Length: 160
Image (cartoon, rainbow, N blue to C red; front, top):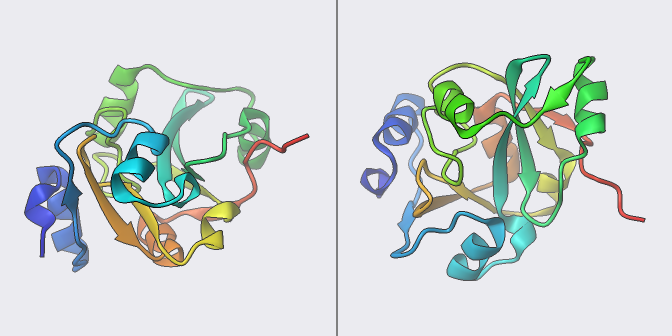
């Protein structure tokens, strides 16, 4: 068990949920999906981006594969919100307890609505941040989405 490598708040969440995962720590920060994929040796699409948006001012977490972008209009429509924006770093830290670049898919300071893009299910295993830009953990996508309390949706940008 390597949860001690994770951010203490995330390690506590893993313990509370009874989850054992292999947390990997890197000597250099992996703040982007491409950096994380290179460090792990996996495809960028196997990285889970945990992105906080504000839907009518209320934080919402969107889980997206690392090679795709979130379509904010699709998120707005999914939530029935008037406006969806990207909040600043202080709001992300306040809502989750983590800094941008290290936000895990669950174990947050506050409970937020979670939307998980269906594209995550294209993989047997995905990798997500373990609370810091230096740490990641692997998990089967359906299990990860279930622990996050996520609703499966289609919110990725469509390619032309």
